Figure 1 (spheres, helix red, strand yellow):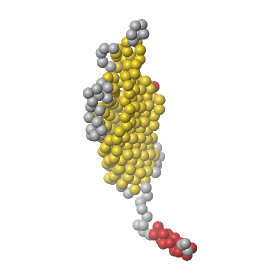
Figure 2 (cartoon, rainbow, N blue to C red; figure 1 turned 30 degrees about the vertical axis):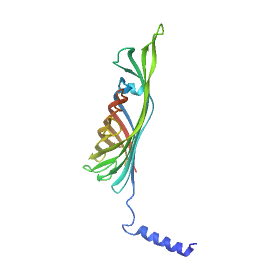
Figure 3 (cartoon, rainbow, N blue to C red; figure 1 turned 180 degrees about the vertical axis):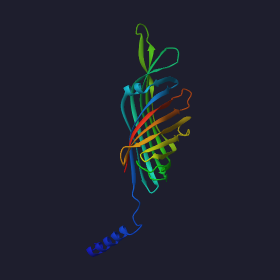
Figure 4 (cartoon, rainbow, N blue to C red; figure 1 turned 90 degrees about the vertical axis):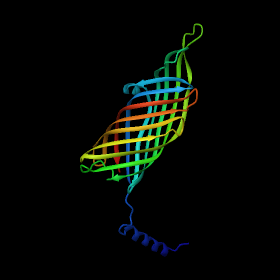
Length: 269
């Protein structure tokens, strides 16, 4: 058993080290941003060689939205840190079309669940992130890590029935796949006034490692306006692209090109 006198001695030593100059580590810094993304969507889904195309305006996508969650967060000590970005959407039946001839009428419906989950290490150059700063203050944060892509897509096509059955809806199959990609990217900000900053972000993932075609990418630019000492509103234009194909003779895969406005509320701790 350790005596009370020895415990007291150890406690005094720990206290001296804690208050010694330069002994304490630089405090951690955190950010959290909840955001909403409302884009124009152009996508193609291929199930065993059968291809359907979907085009949605932002209002149409909003009407079909069944559930969604999107947020970013980071933690940093000194200049090294980690970042997380989670985006999940579930859309109801989307009216689509196909150019395939034969028994198909050209009308299809697509149900879609998509998720993109990023986890990366980051290194900051320049000043620490903040909502308010002097004009000219800037930071540049390259990052590298892993992106997980989740796709659950179901396609139904309208077919001509036999006899007097007329047109019917028939399932053409589903695409269900979750896979990981290598991710590299960078983000940057610069203050133009004490409460207004410009920012940009870009990244790419995949590089064809998980299929014959396997690629994802982001490009984003916008402005952040401080709402307080530790909070700002971010408004930006964002492009998000995804492409996957298994490369088989009767291939299965999808492409998605989205671009539109993103609104985010960011907190600095």
